[in-house]
Length: 431
Image 1 (spheres, rainbow, N blue to C red):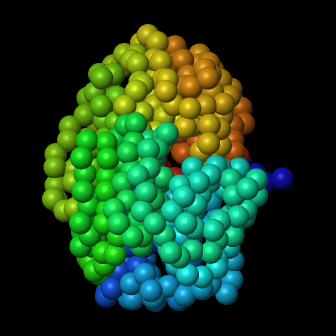
Image 2: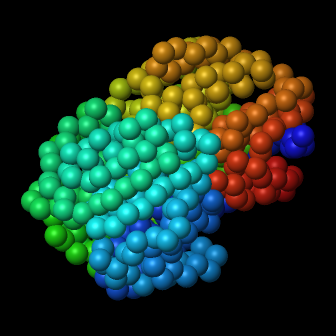
């Protein structure tokens, strides 16, 4: 049996770090470079396993991609430059790769098969395969194309107006990428605004994207042109250290060049609502806004998190749950059913693991209720369950536990933040 990683309480966390490049933007930059005409360069690319899966899949389709550390160069030949893959396209643990790539493949006149790991095999794909079929793609797979493995033959797409039942950047992006290859105008309407990285990046690659209220439209037949992209630090990765800085005693942490796209900054709103002492200083102004963010140990109070705020922080809810255990009063998280279909059922997993550490937390049908302020005990084994965000949340929880915590399946963290434990150790060294 694999050994767990033993983590102990930290008496303070101090210093400056730069979190890795944004995962969502890294994926998209590679994909859009692969279907663009000409050379694309990407700086500060996230070298986590998920994004490397995206590179691997597009290499399988004949795209020239060179990666040197966090720099990536792509020689694109447009949509028509993609070739039928000889091998099965393996997406690993990456839902983003799966769903967005389906949108690209939907318009390609060849056959492709997609497979991933055990976690991907449980994640719902019909949310994209259903609208892509409406557009004319031929998709089959387990449970009538609801789950991987998936088999697809694309081409001859027609545009649609799609009213999405969920606010999902992956659903929206998949349909828009198919729409670029369809006749006419394709429009996606969402119940709430989801992340807009696709719209911003498509514009950077020369595509005209029309946005109006909760709808986004693209005209078919547009050409992407190679671009130079700088990927800001991932706010979803920064969130773990923002929370750590607020809850570990005598702490002061600065995070440099973090992306502060308004569709992603729900975590900053929650921290401010709960009384955290944070400072945001804007830095470079590129396709995506960035800032240096500082946080220090804070007196926190409970809050309610629901409605249109949820899509802006869906990936941060595990660490927000930990934050809430250290806030006075009750925190209620609702309208977050989407958590059930992430790498794990994050509602049940977060509640189960934090309860082991002594948190006063309960699951609801669409979220959780956390009562604080609670001392976390530790002295037990916890597990990431193969989910990178659960693993990082539990590692941060260990910093305030009275007794050591053994984290099982800690290697899952490398999916999005390979240097996470190095950064945690760096900040915990007394300066």
